[in-house]
Length: 413
Image (cartoon, rainbow, N blue to C red; front, side, top):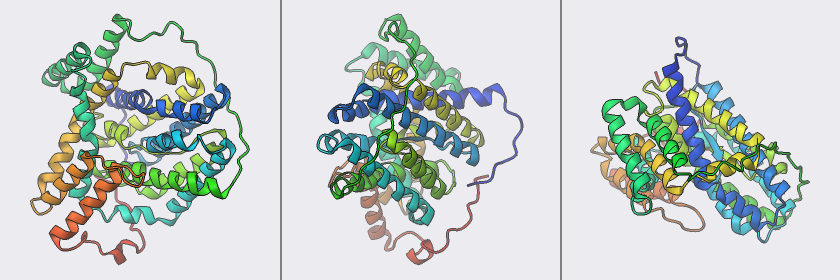
């Protein structure tokens, strides 16, 4: 991990923005994609107790690993459950016995632990040219930027209010733009009674242990796809988010710790958690804090929020999911505008690699899905091929040097 810098004592201004960024990332995660977990649980015919255990295990696991990694590295390491894997499980669990699925979760998690310990993933990450990485990130995030304005068709009052407020805040108090639209949006929804909290009662979640079973069918039909989908759809873009914002923490401890956490939580229902991509970008850019060395606080805040939600199981997760979709998409898109703009600027900065970066951006934005693998992977593959063809070679590091001993990380000053 990178060394911990010696900094002056933290002020309230150092805390408020990263804490809000961490909170927004949690809201976007639960409000945007967590419904897939409930759909997968329904497909598996899980009892309410097993479903609550799944929510408990994945929320606690994500919170603890993100908190530990952010504290140790002093970088905003945001972890999350594997969203593409949850989408895959909606169909996979319909035909796989739950105990065998749990065994497959453990096999996939163990594979990530071995991958992290081997150091190979970090070496592969180092091969990706900065322009291609920036183009990939901009392409992945483009749909969220578009979504910020797409809500005008379905919910013009709320979406228009948030966009107008964002512009005013950026003009008058740029540092408080994201904080302002979050508070304004929540106040607007409560005033219109569009978030019903009357039936909210906090109930502690109780983890339920499931004895794993192992079968060749589950290994091939669940464990292997789960590993590949999580690796290409989450770990790869997640690490590129960190690299794009200048953070140089090695991928090895991240993959190892999240893999170990997934292994320990699998018997309680957790399918996989990993470094986040989309929601991580909310916490790694300038919107979280002007000073990059202060943004690690967002990782701590997100971790604490996840643990809090996990303690109360389905209850608080359901609250976040009750927010209107237009609020979630607009909030996420506006919070990511700075990152999208910065990524595009980085991708286009070098004239020599500009066309390859543009191709990567467009390919990632197209969100190609082939062989069950999502758009982030194919955008990266197409971008690297374009880079190789247009520049006559792969990145400056040769494959031999890249797979030699990984050099000691140097923290961004």
